[in-house]
Image (cartoon, rainbow, N blue to C red):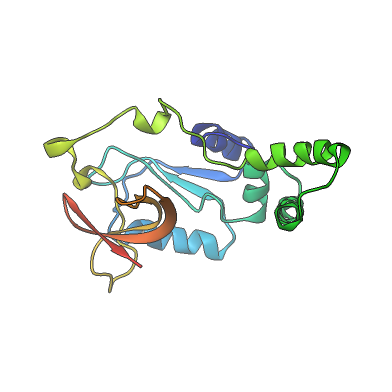
Length: 189
């Protein structure tokens, strides 16, 4: 499986699954329109390198084909992943095995399940730049406005991590976040 985005971008480019767009594009409707036309024709992932109002690129349509998903998971057919997940879910539903030999055999399967658990790390590439307090500013992000009737720019399918303040239980969900101003997002549930 690919472990970081830079490696995946390189792989997409090597396999002809990425188009770099170096001309300036507007995050207000233009990126979405270009992407819509490309995806309707089953086109590649797009890397907009020059986004108006931001010094950050936008990568879009990254996992928009079975071929790109296969590349991301390093399989030849996504059915392999589905079969593995089904097999592991069946293992979770089973009664614990009786006897030492069956338990030892089950350890190998449990080791595979443990690979899917989140890992805590002290340093990650996403932490290379950390802006806090007054430095934190949503305006530096190339947040796109997708549709003419949208109420504003949205971060679509963002991974939101929340933590219950009372019991510490965490949740991860994919939500659409609307940018209200440079410091405020609204979460659409």
